[in-house]
Length: 159
Image (cartoon, rainbow, N blue to C red; front, side):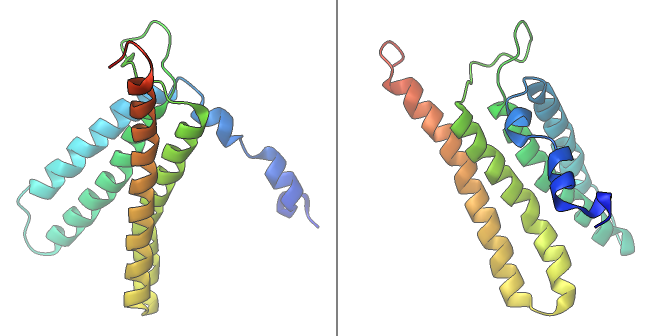
């Protein structure tokens, strides 16, 4: 098999996602990037557009928001960088970060499923799959942060 198509070779060259979610540089990128994308998406959705541009403005706005929210959540879940203005006191465990990352991935994949599945013609199954992905993703993100909150509240001196 050709080297670039070899599954083992490709798997060895992929970055380790466990290391990526443990990188403190993800916090400023996630928080600032997510907030900027959210503001731009919200601005596009409220901007008055008419005709053919209205559809594209709404589609771009929805895409930006669907990417911004998981990116912002990943930024919140990232480890706190030392001596930075991005120290918020939120310090999730590795397992909680994994839950938030998996949920963020589900949320980002939901509109992709809609965009790719609608032209095929299976409208109801595609809609149900996308809604299920968004629901599971939201539940995973909330589970990560709720687990951290309950852990902090359960420790003596934090209540």
